[in-house]
Amino acid sequence: MKARTLMRRLAGGLAAVGLVFTAGCAGAGTLGATDQTVTIAMVSNSQMTDARELSSKFEEANPDIKLRFVTLSENQARAKITASTAMGGGEFDVVMISNYETPQWAENGWLVNLSDYTRKTPGYDENDFFPSLRESLSYDGDMYAVPFYGESSFLMYRKDLFEQAGITMPRTPTWQQVADAAAKLNGPDMVGICLRGKPGWGEVLAPLDTVINTFGGRWFDENWNAQLTSPEVQRAVQFYVDTVTKVGEPGAAASGFSECATQFGQGRTAMWYDATSAVSVLEDPESSTVVGKVGYAMAPMVEKPNPGWLYTWALGIPKSSDKKDSAWKFISWMTDKNYIRLVGEELGWARVPPGSRLSTYQIPEYKEASKAFGQATLDSIEGADPLKPTVQPVPYTGIQFLAIPEFQDLGTRVSQQISAAIAGQKTVAEALEQSQRYAEVVGRSYQEQS
Image 1 (cartoon, rainbow, N blue to C red):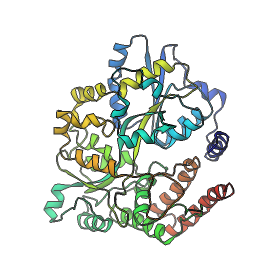
Image 2 (cartoon, helix red, strand yellow):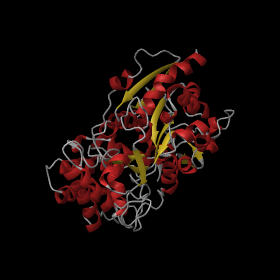
Image 3 (cartoon, one colour):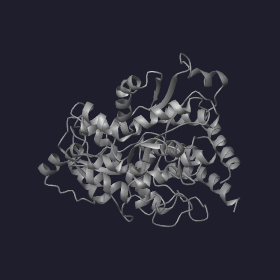
């Protein structure tokens, strides 16, 4: 896609969700900063909180550089980082983005080519990153963001509760087996399963899209005809909504990754289907009451095997930054092999950022700490195929997102419809009919180009 087309489409998406920045807002992020201050915009997940806690080590080693963190929830971070980078705001020197944004923004010239830096940084070893993640963060063969952690998705379940109930969880379960187990374990003091319901293309749609894919559904057919009211999609979404409303967590329509992590980590739910990176929370005694009680199974399936997603939170440098060299110093510190060991030694090996570097899984201490989940994580990441995400052919790539500029807006709108169905404000059929209309607008824009 040409850069002008990408700029126009993304700009339209920004306008559609109301991400309009004034000049005053753009400058607000640099208040109090000095010429030596690197400003980092990041998501408030546990691994990022650990990085902030350890950042004094970086400042001690680099006394000429000060760090300023802007930490936001996932939905807020996506909106602010997208708007700033697209408009060349310049208030961020390092941005936390994913494999959804990186190739598109690189094509549009908004990001610095980090391979130019990685190849000149002794011992950094770009080839140590998981190949699928490295490829997903590349454009024309070069990396424009580097992984902080990588993930797929899998099913987490309470081994002790399953044993008490006489239920066996297979390594590769079906969604029906999961639903049946959730129904048996659901009760006054324990819900059967936690599933995201919070609006956001990176919230409820992340797990739901994998369910749609494995049920045989798709967003568009090969000719960009919207398919969100197809029988396959309707069955998948109805199954998801029924499961979370009947045997899921209270307030599911407002529950995202963080809320489910708290529910499961505090022993209030028997299962949780979500990101493999959740192990950093669940296996940490400081944040979890279920350490050692959790079993890990592959992403549940129906028709399509290996339906788990492929995702990475990564670090990039906007072209608008005027501190690119200092920004790379920080990025290389936070994504280097030595940082992995620093987290393990300082905070505990269960809190190591998982799924980014192959060498992590060769560290003896981490191999011991990850016995329960290490192989399942590796198999899930390696089994995910964003080039073939569905049973039937599609004109897009990506598993839990569509790798098109419009998806940031389209996915957000559709997610709001799904959350409304989970909240009981409308039926699944009504939610999908409105979602279909949103998707048809996007589909037509591609049909007109062909």
